[in-house]
Image (cartoon, rainbow, N blue to C red):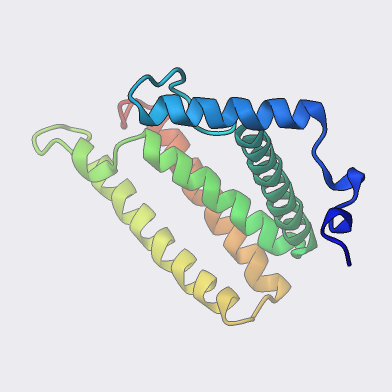
Length: 170
């Protein structure tokens, strides 16, 4: 092989590529001599493509997660969905209203009523806990699910009555 045949003409960079290469070399030489022209030292195009790709991957991940979550949620039995709905409703209500313990005034005529309601809620909570524990162990009988829904309904009714009667300040 002859030395002048080692590279083909197509292997040489184009005039535009040569100009960009020499411009980059000149910028680098100016940067090392203390006369830096640009503050942004990264390749802007690659940086923008990287940001765009990461955003696309992030949105795709969120979409996949929500699709899987919806699929799992819709595949649950109705009883489990009702249980979750009641639990979330009671949690939201209990976050908004203070507990009955804080509202009991010792010398008030309503103290006995509030204490009675507090006991009712405690009993309902204990029964709900027992039925939820049974449901987690795999016992999803229709009778237990109906009883659990009734207990949730009773607890929500008690809390609603307490709010409507002014027993719990909102």
